[in-house]
Length: 491
Ligand code: SF4
Image 1: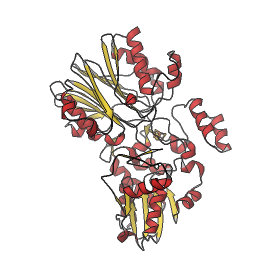
Image 2 (image 1 turned 45 degrees about the horizontal axis):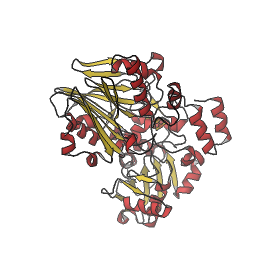
Image 3 (image 1 turned 180 degrees about the horizontal axis):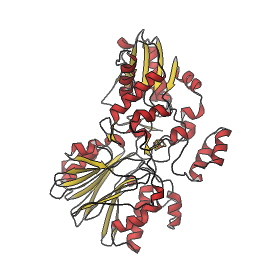
Image 4 (image 1 turned 90 degrees about the horizontal axis):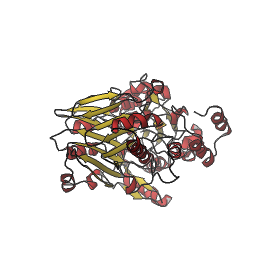
């Protein structure tokens, strides 16, 4: 049985965690963390948690479920303190159990440390082996980081920043971290900055958050994004910045899918607003793949700004063609194909009045597996569409993500196994166009800022160890040309 999340479906990459931190003596930091996590709920719905310190003790509260299900007034009141970190989780490594909910906590002598992690390490196994841990004793990459910090604090380091300076350079992959001990909140971004992390200022304190709306909701103003490879330490002396990684490793590669879909529409990254960038993707699709049609409709929610942009650039009217049930539960279990099909209908229902007899342009943000989209398109045909022209706001998703997005393995990626014409045929539409990578990068408005595009181009910025890629090779019938490429270019 497979659990299907509310954004559903097998067709979209799943988000992988939101992190938040606040240092604000005198303010109700647990409540501020609750608000911040609420604003980051879209990044993970499996579990939520926070760690709060009053200077003497670190209190941790976490559970499976949405932020609003996990926390209530009574639980927040039991978390007194001046500083806090919080986490919403979607599991990409480790199982989906309470044990893996975050923050992760360790107590070492006089040190108490809590950690929240967004991203995936690619060298977890090697690090665990190096540290002499038995296989299976580390439940996730985040747990491993906590283990390494614990070890360092036990053996050598005077405090958490010193332990981080030793441990961080050993980590490879994607990690935006928030950490806390009794005195300080710390934020870290990996040398590629795969996942976002920003710094905000309260009147009497500081905030760290995966995305800018979490600053807005607590009344903080944006100061800046952390640089790739930067660590900021926030304590009674203010904010100071450190650089734990060698200069040679710094190579900004923000996940391009933050722009396409993951980040909230009101988030700003690289100084750009996500909603505006997504509208530009739609405009560029209209230039790249024009078509004669009567109505442009989005697959909600992800396709909405793209459809608006397509309509604006093409002059074809924009309309609603699919109504989304906003009140659908977080998760439902879909054990059979038939029930999965019903699941699609629980979430989206066609608006027949806008569809019947019309030539439609349908805009979607991405296609990962394609199963849900196929059902959605079938509904449009059943509702009487005269033609369907599908336009996708990103290039074909052909390679798995090893940096913290759950896309499944390569055999599950529709475009890994089919040519565009075969995909068009499988989805049953009159025409299909994916936005080209150059246009997508242009549409971000930050083309030179540095992006990861690995799942679209097979250009992995951080080498993925053979054991992970071997996994890909074993599980899938990869074409010989790709096998060759892997052998020649392990990146
Ligand atoms: S591989 Fe794709 S989803 Fe993963 S970080 Fe890179 S761009 Fe994002």
